[in-house]
Length: 89
Image (cartoon, rainbow, N blue to C red; front, top):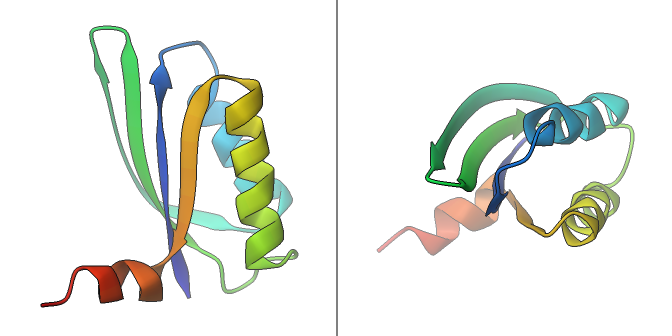
C-alpha cells in the first residue's frame, strides 16, 4: 500500500527533513520525492510505502496535518487507492 503526500508553503529550512522524519518514526518508507522552490514557495510530492506502518493511516495523516498547521504549511496525505480513483475517467 502506498500514500501520496503533498506539502506546500513558504520555504523554510528543514521541511523535507521534518516530514521524512515523521515518516521514519512511523516506519513509513519514502520511495519517491519531487520538490521545487518557486520564488519563496516550497512544493513537494512524495510517494510513500505505508505497508509496514506502525500507526494507522488516519493517525499518520493527522500527525502530518498537525505539523503543517503549526508551521503554516498545507500538508495532505492521500491513500493511493483514493488518488487513483479520483483520476480515473
